[in-house]
Length: 215
Image (tube, rainbow, N blue to C red; front, top):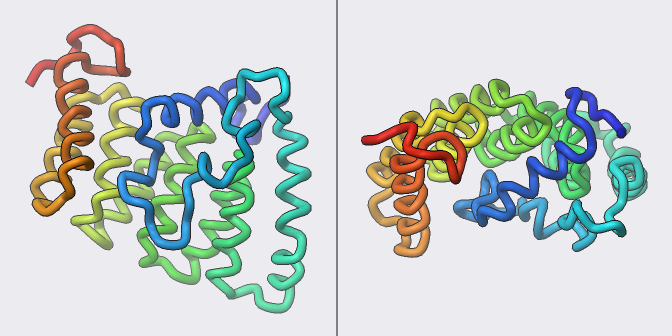
């Protein structure tokens, strides 16, 4: 089975992405941030269904991404400090589940535009999908230094603490802070966060676990 750069195999990468999609709370998208569609929305249906026999391999998806990115990479040769161009390339690799490559381009963009919280959140999501939980958390912590009220950063911080660290208490703290700092959150999204708080408080650890944490 093919290994990714982080040591995860193909199935693990697909399962990691599929877990969040199945929960309906894909990292980074409590609010859809301008200019960056979710990987689930960008990818062909076959890419979002990892357990079907027709699903492409990561190698096939990498070839697709390389082909799509080629014209932008050519432009990058003459304009290497174009942060927006680097983000466009990152989006291509993210949408084809090449999360390590995507994170690399997002990181290069952030070197040019370090206060771009939207892109830092994207990078955190990619790092999480590669298995780099600590790296993802560091990116979100930096996002919150730059924008302490950012709802997506707080939302993802809770998700990664809960799913990646089995830290239900830490997740609840992040989500409660999200609600406190964003009092005008629309009802549907507020309800979503409140359901997560309830689930984490009652179940602890990963969804489905039994009462490891009580408020």
